[in-house]
Every structure is written in structure tokens, then in C-alpha cells.
Image (cartoon, rainbow over all chains, first blue to last red; front, side, top):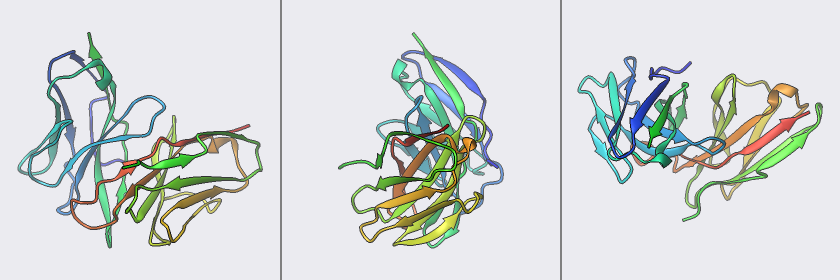
Length: 113
Length: 115
């Protein structure tokens, strides 16, 4: 079962920042938090991942709390093309470089014009 | 750099038949994982291969199998197809290394319909 908790849906006005929360209270020390999004009928698109420090790339920022029990994905200027299901995932490390992603139901983000 | 490539994109099979799906990982990636996505169960991990060896396995029956070739390309096979096997099958590739370089990228998937 998924070990992360996300709101089932969120709306965001176009051009505004979208802040997607995620709780991962049981995360262990060597597990990364990954964020993916999936637009209908397509494969999941990698957004960002982190361990304990905040991360930023060209798509988004990831803010991880100091206790690592929750994180927030920030899309700084949401566009209509950001409408998708966003998944926050703990990677279960199985040893020797093997990571298993356990997906939950995600958050359906709707960007409103 | 080419992404993860999966073939075929769409296929229809009859109950009892078998199917083979193919995945070409990103160049240089040695780890290939397979996932099944259905409306009811969501995205579920099937198995992972690294250097031609199965390194991790999800909770699926033995009808689901896979293999990886020396060029890191992978195939998965489902035998004795059931209606419930209708799903989007996703392949993901990564370097397979420990640490933060292990970014995992997905392909567009293969849509399987069993009739």
C-alpha cells in the first residue's frame, strides 16, 4: 500500500503558484520522495525528487520539512498544461541500487483559466 | 537523448493467449522496471531487472514474467491472459545506481485489452 497521503483534488488559477502537499510520516532515512505527474493516457512524467534538502529544477520546487514527514511540490506559475494527476511517492529502497516506487491515488490538479 | 521506448503501443488479445511487450531504456540505463496501471488498482510494481537479473519483484502471479538482454532492453510476458489483465503496462528505466542519480523515467506505456 502507498505510504503517502495526498488530497484527492485541487484547483489552481492559471498563472498562480500551485502548492501540492504530501504527507509521508513513515518515511525512513534512506528513502527519497519522488514527484511524478500523469496526463490522461500517458506515462508518468518525472518532476523532481529529494531526500532532505529543498530542491529546484526547471519544472518545480520541492520543499521537504525538517522532520521529513511531509513535503510540498510548488509549480511557480501554473498553466493549463499542468492539469494532471500528481503523485507523491516514497521510493522503497530494496538494496543494491534497486528502488521500487509505490504509487497512491495522487492529487488531481485542475488549472482554471 | 531518446526516452524510454515501449512497443507496441496498443494491442488486443483474446483470453487464454499470451502477450510479449518490449521496452528499450534510455541509453546508458541498466535498470528496467515494469508497472501495471488499472482503474481499480492504480499503478502497481511488477518487477525490476538490472544487468539481466531480476532484482526485485512485486506481488503478481507467475503468469507475469520478464527478462532483460545484454543491451539492457527488456521484455515482459503475460501468459494465459485473463480479462483482468487489461491495463496500461509501463516500463521505467534508471541508471540503477544508489543515491540521487537514480532518477526513474517512464515510457508512454503499452495499452493491452483482453477480450
